[in-house]
Length: 156
Length: 163
Length: 154
Image (cartoon, rainbow over all chains, first blue to last red; front, side, top):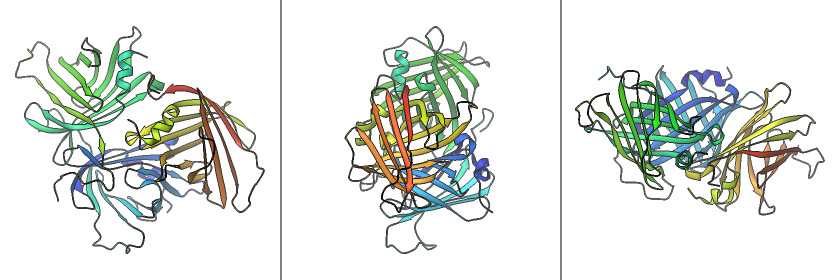
């Protein structure tokens, strides 16, 4: 089944969580998804901060949209990797797996897995040119993102 | 363009920082400011998070724009108070001070005080109408926002906790 | 907010609108919005062209301007009618931004942009990648400034 932007429409909103960077630091992550380009594109905005929100380790703005062939790709700008074009890799429903090479030749992989209606498991890693293909033990940035649900006045 | 609105538009970008919530709890703040409507208004998306796990404690989406008489007003949606309209109140030059009363009779006061190009003190205080400023019913968020610093590859990593 | 990218392109930021004459012969109303992101490390570009008769959007685009290590502009772009591409700056006059890069299907796209006062002109062309030149018509866009990014700042 060819994925469509509409398959990810239910992710629209703000997601946050605490995770770890590929280098092993704790990180706080904020991810938003919103429809764009008259509903034909999905705008994705990723921010990873240190635990006091004082330094942004990594920021990515991207747009998932259909090529004229109907295949989805993502256009992105990363504060670490610069301009990117990422391919949407075939995967199961509820998974967005993106992969591509940066202008410096680094291989970037980003995956969102919908574990539950309000939970996304985010993983990402990059490796330099010539470095071995990632295995299960390759360090990754990981975070379990929860859909932002505001604390309610009658809540805790 | 309204002079104050022009000043606020120059704050465009993402601001983050630590805050005290109700003077006891520590919280994290993120405020994204963006000129909209072809420069005729400014949007502010203000979020307060609990530091552990990034649970959203308080979120406000605001449009700041001049009314027909030129005075600045906001139309906001707050996760605590619902729809709120605030009006600019006199303050020092370059300070954005806003106040209003919710349908539930809560008086809200928001102050954004730029300290330099990259730092801004922000306070959002609320209390029931009639309660004094020193009342125990006063609640709010107060902290210093900094224009977000982006780590660059090759620069030393900030001193942060390991997992 | 000063970065090498913004030092060169701050006066381009904002919203622009005007007529586009497509290479295929039809006309439309084009709008460009350029916004700095990540403190000016990149400029996000959003484009839309409206059919004048029906008011429907006929093209939509998105992209980012950034600088490579040598200070040349890299523009990764998406257009619903041509797909995805990474364009690199090619030599031109200092006030002109010329970019070129491959498109899927053995095509090449070149784009030339210039901002003079409150006028933004853009022309682009797609041609077969294996020929050295091609006399296909260009798409021309001439837009007027609708809004500064921050009025009075640029």
